[in-house]
Each structure stands twice: as structure tokens, then as C-alpha cells.
Amino acid sequence: MQVDELQVPDSWVFTPIQRPDPRGVFLEWFKAPVFREAVGHDLVVKQANHSVSSRGTLRGVHFADVPPGQAKYVYCTRGAVLDVIIDIRVGSPTFGVCDAVQLDDVDRRAVYLSEGLGHAFLALTDDANVTYLCSEPYNPTGEHGVHPLDADLALPFPDDVEHLLSDKDAAAPTLAEAQASGLLPTYEACQAFYASHRA
Image (tube, rainbow, N blue to C red; front, side, top):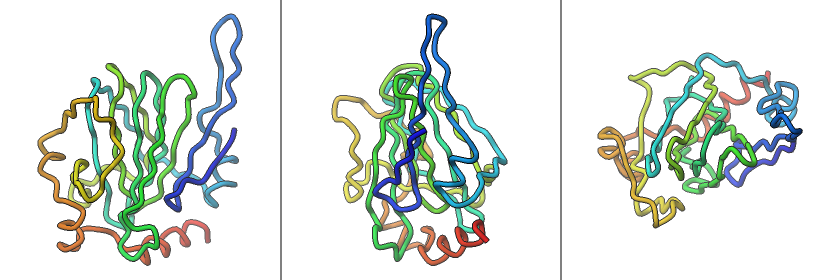
């Protein structure tokens, strides 16, 4: 498995080795020792989510209070999505920077984003299936969002796809509004939390 750190610090892309034969294909989409070597700690999974989305469905930008936050290991089992990770940690040297990785059933990559980073994805195909392993269960009082079409974020979604948002995501504040209201995690708190994992 090849592992590459993304432009947003504390996020990685994992590209598995695929072994095709006349019966189909086999791969390891998550491997704990490889993950630990790259990230510096184990992934403790407390919830596993699966979504099925029609083309144009845009989910996010989502994030959770830190601590405990919610780290995610995201994998597309069918179809294709454009997965976007955004540094929304106030005080981070890369605040506002984003990475976009196409996750699909061809290259079968996965991404991992640490607690405190923003996450969104756009379904590029109908019946796009996404599975994500989460470090914490869903906590409605500690979960927040930023509007994925915020012009200041300028996330690199393709122009030829009509966006379908939930009511909740459509009503989310801009990044500037979320920062002004104190919703965003701080870089300092996130770094301290990551250090506690590695201790």
C-alpha cells in the first residue's frame, strides 16, 4: 500500500495494491500496521458509516468539536466521489487550504483526515457508495458544518454537476461566520489532542 501525506497536514491518501485475476480483484483497503506507521497511532473505530448518493449529492462540510472530534477513514466501494478535506483549524499555518482526491471503484484509494479537519464529498456518479470508519460516534450536539459552496472556500467541485444539498448543509454558515461565532476548532487544541494519541 502506498501512503502519501496530503497538502493539508494531518491527512493522508492510501492507495492499495490491487491483485486482479480471472475471478475479479482482491485488495486490502485498510491495514492497521501501515496506518500506524503513517499516522503515528492506531485507528480506534467507534462507528462505521455507509452512504449511497445520486450524482450531484454534496455532503458536508462537516466537522466536530475537539476534543474528541471525529477522525475519518473514507473509502468509495462503488462509483466515484470527489472527496475534499479542508483545514478549518483556527491558527493553523494552512488554514483554509483544501485537498481534493477522487475516490472510486477503479483506483480504490482511501483518505484519512484527523480530528478538527473539515470534510465534504461530491458524488460524481449515480449510486456512489462511500464507507467511512469513524474514531467517535455521531454526536449531534458536537457536530457542525460550513457551507460547501462558500465562495471564500472555493472548493474545487466540477461545474458540470448540479449540487444536491441537505437542508442542514444548505443552511450552514460560511467559514468566516463559523469562525466569528467560535464554532471552529483551534490548531492548538487539535495538536494537543493528536499528541495524546501518540503518547
